[in-house]
Length: 137
Image (cartoon, rainbow, N blue to C red; front, side, top):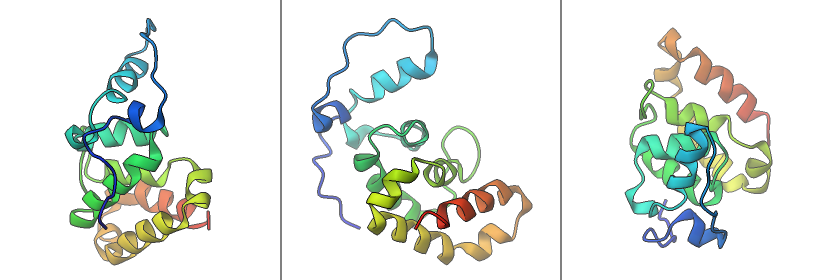
């Protein structure tokens, strides 16, 4: 899946929505604020996991996450194998309804790796999330 995005740009630049300086006592809000200013090409798996988990920049980050999950469905941010997939599956339902091509791609990747995900009980939450994800479309 080739990405046509300019990976030198930030979420703020792509959305044309620059957030003003924030003074908010939440580490997560500060992290999202900073990630919106980071070029997409510099995003780590953990950056993708955080932003997707907060439904931030989905139209730009979902294609990047899909590219990564194609290589390794159990790609890991800072928490556990498959945490990127788990956040992707749990992201905004409306996005997946409007972007069925991405939904189909994630479903294909999951089903291609189903045997691996079914083989270990530690992936139970991911399997449950997939059931919910699958019911979207």
